[in-house]
Image (cartoon, rainbow, N blue to C red; front, side, top):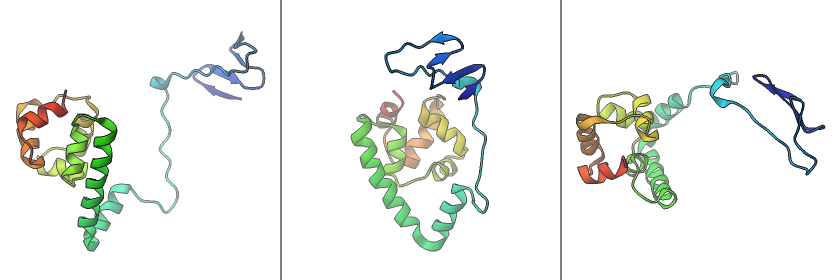
Length: 144
């Protein structure tokens, strides 16, 4: 049995707070994800992924990472279809951190832009176009 913010699920009896989910063999599951946050757990001896990437780049394997990002971009393009900011960034062989640094912003902002949770504004669009070596029309398509 598990619980999530007042919702109790019983897989054995298929009931949700006293309401029968039926006897058709299905299981009713509901969780309000807006009010639930998973704790940040790190295994002992682990390190942030960004630290690992920095170390790999320092070890002289930055070109290998860039090539891997470009291969991923081709895969994203097949999956997503139209142009996306993420696809353009990967095609340029850049991490979110590297792109952020090149346009003088933060990595979390790049993540918000890629997710469509923030509008870039004209100045940021210009800097992105320059950093990604694309024209404004291509970049505009990425934000539609």
